[in-house]
Length: 319
Image (tube, rainbow, N blue to C red):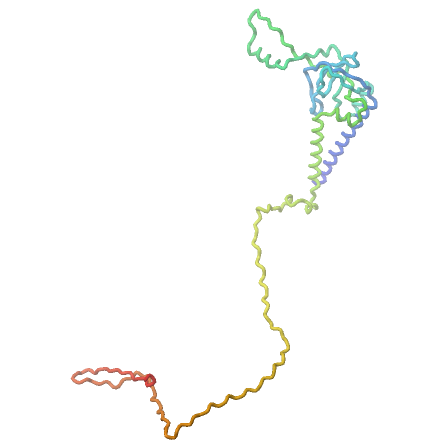
């Protein structure tokens, strides 16, 4: 529901901006079709100025001037005009001016009317006027008999309630977009850029619908964790591979070559003994005993205690 609200708000602001741009173009075309061409020579500038309404995005100043070299006029404009310079303009008559103000959404800041005595004469103030007034106030009144020339005072602002007619600064043969460009200020372009940025933010905020979460970048997701904050687990070792047992290849046994029969070794010749030699007889060896028994104890003469005598039998095989 919130997404639909943001979409509706964004479309409403975009539609209203389109109405303003369309109205600006139509108003310019109306000036080019019903306006009259003239030239205005700028005179002096009034010291007082006012801010535009309803949006205070530009400051409107008043100038004296001369139209067609004969008519003294009062010029109200948001442009900084140069004194003693001539500008080409296109203005509307009174019967058409009311219709132009009614159809225009933007305030028509450029207005012109005849100059009257009630408007006064612009006074030129020096750049040091503020400092000199502060100095006079600090020094106090002069001594008796000292005459000081009074400093010029800013005149009252001209009457803004008198009927006027709107005008635009238009070069001969200019097109509608050229007239719009030459009659708009930096404040109006700043408002337009801010308006477009607001529309972009509204559409971007409304476009992030829940079912489009998969298309959003990873950093915009709720469960996003920066890679530097993640815990990196060690990779698990690979599972041991089964050992391949060696199996000899079964090949048909080749036929073994025939083996020759073994010949018995020749018997050693025996030498007969002479008849006079008698063969020695070998007696069977005395059986060897490993017992450590000794002969019975014998008591030496003249002693009352028997003496123990041990003797090891000789091994006949070591002789």
